[in-house]
Length: 299
Image (cartoon, rainbow, N blue to C red; front, side, top):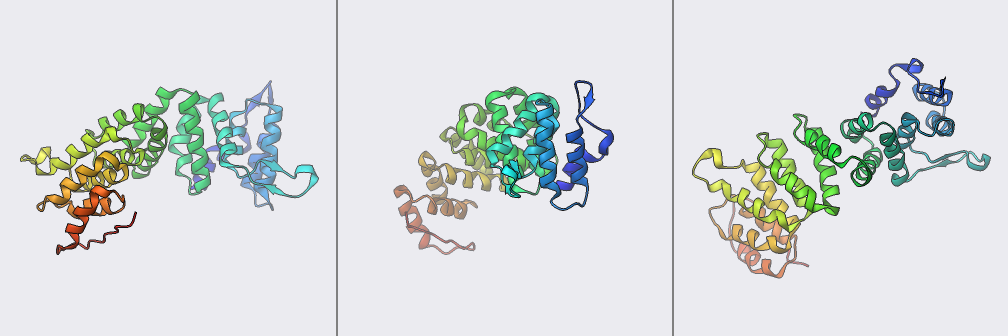
């Protein structure tokens, strides 16, 4: 995956250069050429060139992005041949600076390309950058791009969008929860599934009523009014992550012996350690079930 992302920037080779003050940025060009090469310690050497490119042209978006993409903050500091690893925050800052200089271009790259990288550190740097966009950049445009991604037909786009939305939503549930609730009406099951998952990870109790209604839709008379089993099962898990005032809803499910989600509710309750869940869990231990029930009563 990383190779395909790098090709976005390197496929045109040296011909495609960033121009500043009428002159090409030779350090950026040299760094990109090093990445394509098979030279020893090429990434470290390329990072040095990207840093020099920024010294030459401080608003060079591509150099900032590539500094965030590759794993280095310093190169041969004090003339010692040491590789100094950059923190996720530092790498995210560089990616955010790329966005600041070219917002439209790099917002799309961060959401639809960088988050897809196989390296978890690259993913986390992109998440850091997107969080900064939410806090300091064009929030509306970011939310538009995330909604576009979670509505995508590509499962990876949907997963990445839910991950970013849940992380942002933990610090600002007032904004994010209503957006995710609206997405529960989307006609694509994968979109609804990821919206439910994000609501659970945000953990806002404001999501409890809509998740409970979604679960109860399984008993609707008309098939078109019933949510699919997979999404309802995820909604039970989401209630388990929220806890607190979600516990009575989970207990209600365990007490409905006709519900196909009883075992899911019991599992969710067993992970919470809430006193209100103890008796329903004890009752569940007395029952026989076609699905295995593992109950942990430890707090």
